[in-house]
Length: 413
Image: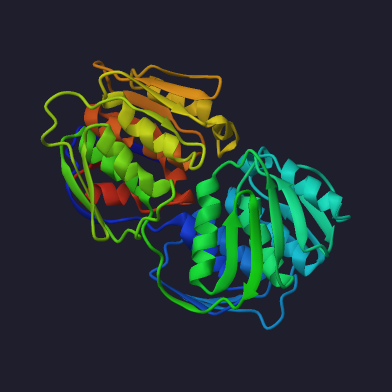
């Protein structure tokens, strides 16, 4: 699908897209307690997570998720599409239950490394066919104290928390450096709210026990996915209220984009569960920023969506992991920004974006990466543009383009 964007002013009110991170974590709790997710948005990653829990015995009927009577593998094959989150959470859970299963995914997921979890499995005498997809695993995790490299993905660690809960508790030692730490904090927060007794201290997570209680409600809104609506409004001198967001925790994470945009010179403020942004009163250009996103690397794309409209060079550090996302984002971000006349480059572990006075109409052949398509939308609404393969946004937010139309975006799909 092609999205043709015309210069527009983004303004009004919109409900935030549902948090993919929270939604997936809640879906996996259906392995332990019944769950009702009201008005669930079926993104590709959500559907992959549903395939994962049904493979382990959960029953899904519309909004209702019913826990399995007995946790066991009900199939010998699960395809995760492009969802690295669901895959990396599933593998530790599957080996805690025990059995044999083959996991696979699309071409983007086949390129992403699995080295850290493969090493842990081999260290625990579990048979593993490869260190990339497709991957066959056979065996059972019997140790309740495990150690894993923290430099590849936080998602394995989330999966191990669920896995050790299945085994009655235990400890996870994470060897530094620990990337995407905010998502580990998010897992701990969600599961503590649902009844688990666990703590994250230094580089060790301790799971003491407890019972996961049922959940009935909506999936809260996502700050990171909402940031592209916000950036489009700021860049086009609009004013926007994004509703139904969660109460931001104290640790650095996706919610920190509210303060980041404020530091860049936009009006950006939380009022209750709403994020209010405005570019109406910005007299000069926005301000560049230096920011470390190692604890929440997806924020690099959110910063990159607004950085072209600043008066100088924005430097984003802690971006090493971006080379192993749905695309090599260090490469595809630069290519996509360049299509609109914006100069950017990666050097060492820093991504630099030069604010531009010459943002021009662009045409992007988007890789199969939802955040790249979202990133260039503010540029398209500022100067006009075309985005090929625009339907890749369905991975996390299938309503993205229609939402933008509701708040003033002139788009031809």
